[in-house]
Image (cartoon, rainbow, N blue to C red; front, side):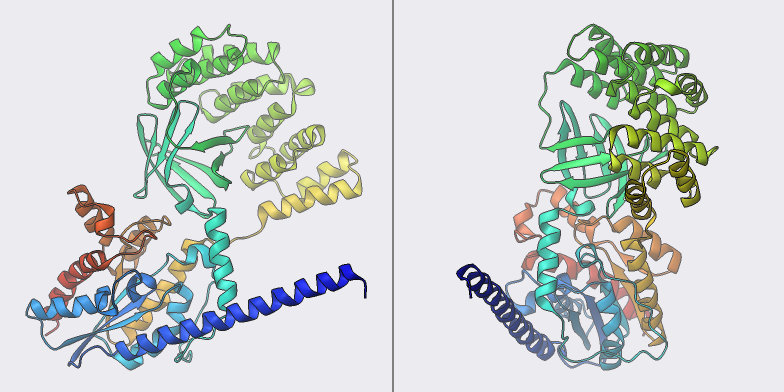
Length: 527
């Protein structure tokens, strides 16, 4: 056997053995933890039972001892508050997502026979990408040590952390030039000095303007950067991590515009119109500022002048994208672009395609196809298709045939259509699907379900959870509000959390205090 082949075989064998040993180690650790949790789950004897279901925040990861988890601290607090004869069962396990909690709920309900069930779950759905599970009425409960491929789950978690996937990866301070953008965990979005709202799921971002208008977009981490794209932006917006660096006049004008100071922004942009480096971008800013001031004809005139003087510049496409996004100038922008359609640069063709996507999807498909054939930017073709649901496969096929696109190239573009339209069940929809079944099973067992928020909303699920609780008539204990209040009162993060984001003993104590207040009232009312 050649030496190179022997080396490859040895490497492959070593890798397989290392993975097998890792799996055995992970299974052994998990079994040891499960044995300890099983021994503790009975709590103290008592005539009334509270069951706590969830993941590592219920299990007590980060606490100095199992007795410092929130369920066991809850039992002590209830006793101290005069609610005697209550045992609290800890049904939490690190890494569990909503599907796994649902799968094991029947076994816990049968064993514990609780009056109250507190549920804290959803954080791990962001990385496990669990598929929706529908249990039948007679679904067999899953008891005993859970056999899972733990190496695969570990790799999925590591991949998620490295990729920075989902809304949790957006939280923080970013900048584009001197414009500062801050995504806060509670759903507040600061753009310059303007306070907006945001929500997200996977890579879908919705920005809620101050007047309530919603702007859909997509947000994807690419290394250290956060890249935003949307139908109103011909080019993605690239945000760099960290606070903005001040001093660039163009960025200062953009910050004025983002902060709602349109007059100051217009003056700043106008002063830079003749600048040989930033003049074109400044003129696009003039269009934005005029639109913000309601000067529709002036904005259109500035964009038309740009189109004549700099037809292929990205700033021209940005100016027309702004006109297309404003209802008052949309029709005029369409007329100008259609009048010059034969000479439009690819980015302007994409703006025209977006303007046509609803009223004339066939022409929209042909227009976007011309753009991608001209510059080969397949990702922009896919973005267009994702924002144009009225453009069907038949429209795309007709455009490909009309343009006599070679079969291999046509197949590539059809695959982009398939990728844009591929159904993807929302993580939050899956969470609701599982919670709805879990709530029903808890009620069928004669217990009262109560949902909990996490101490911090790191995956953007709290607004969705609140709406779910309202619609389903389920009580919700807002732990995040209590933690935010404690931090606002001067507590340091390290007084409540360990470095990886789990609670420490004091953090779990605060969780237990919040739940104890709710549980004591419910238990007294059920006597």
